[in-house]
Amino acid sequence: MKQEEYLTKRIVVRAARRGMKAASKETVEVMGYNVVAENGQVVKKFSDGSQQIIGTIAVSGSTGPIKLD
Image 1 (cartoon, one colour):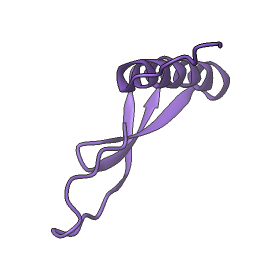
Image 2 (cartoon, helix red, strand yellow):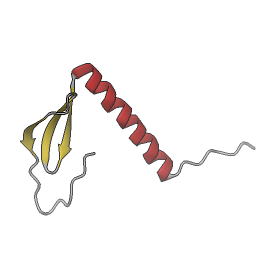
Image 3 (cartoon, rainbow, N blue to C red):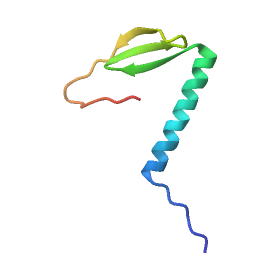
Image 4 (cartoon, rainbow, N blue to C red):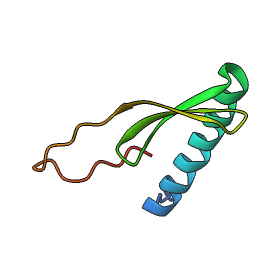
């Protein structure tokens, strides 16, 4: 009987982070910028290190904290 592989939350989180970093790096190479949520704002981060705030995230008090990255 073949034993099934066991995935822990830690393994899944680590793999997801690696994938997101790789996708982020590729996006910067192709488009020259990434758009991220940071401190309640939507920020465009350019490959030269500059940033541009392009909007804010409206949060109602009843939804709890929002974590996008």
